[in-house]
Every structure is written in structure tokens, then in C-alpha cells.
Image (cartoon, rainbow, N blue to C red; front, side):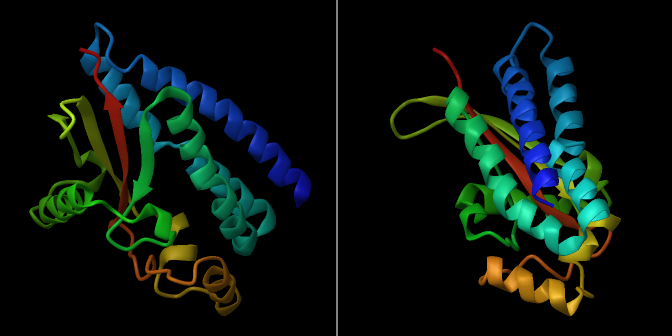
Length: 196
């Protein structure tokens, strides 16, 4: 179990380097291609793949423990290394550190409305440039995370009691359950400073 966590942590660091390069080059001459690459990358995120691996090899309790360690660590390392802000958020968060800002809540509610109107969760995103109160300009982007079958083990309505107990130990304020396939599980949110 420890060896799996160590190997996945090493792969996480490799992922961090790749993602940092991708974000840093986000605004190159071929903006549309870079946006498509970022969307595809977020949809096939390393965390999702590594969680599937841990779930398969060690079970759901180990996957929850891995997510508790790796998810925030990955986004924090990316954010700190390139002065960008990256996180996952939701209207129903598991980790209180991922609570949505008022802007993120507005966007997430907009995502829910777009889904109700028939838009595919896989294509729902939002982006804008904005200037903060200190007259600094930023690019903000959010991409909906669809709930897939693998998500239901920990985020569905029928969570194994032993797993539920461990989730409650790690996340006493958990609200991230009761999802069904096709729901909006949450969103990736990215904020990148724009140079003048």
C-alpha cells in the first residue's frame, strides 16, 4: 500500500511539471488549440486516473485516503510554482478547503442551468478576463467535472458503510455525496495573471 502511494506521489510530481508547462504556455499564438488541449487535459486529469488505479489495486478506502493527500497537494504545488490559482470546487464539497467563492458559485449555478437546458456536461465551461480591485488583470476559467461511474463509489447515494465511516473521519463536513451519473460533480477553476 505504501509503495503504491509513493509511486503515485512520484507520478503526481511528473504531472505537476507537465501541467505547469501547459498552463505557462496557455496563451501562445494558437490560443484555440491551447484551450482545447487544456480542456482535454482537465477531462482526463491525472488525479482521476490515479484514483482509478488506487481504487482498482487497493480499494475505495485507500482511494479516499490517497485523494485526501494528493488532490490538494497537486493543485497547491501547481499554484505556488507559477503564480496561478488552480483548484477543484463544487456546490457540494467534500474538502472544506475547496469551498466555492461567490464567483465560482455563480458559475456553478450557471453550469447547472445549462445542463437543465440540455447542454452536455462534458462541454460546459466558462472563461473571462477580469480586473480586480488592485487593477490587476486575470484570466479565469472553469470547466465542469461530470460524474462518472467510478465517482459513485465515494460520491454516490449508496456508499459502503465502512467507506462512509472513513470519509467522515477524513472529511467531517462532507457534503459531496448523492450524485448520479451525468451530474455535475463540480468544476476545475483556474486563475492566471495576465501580463500588462
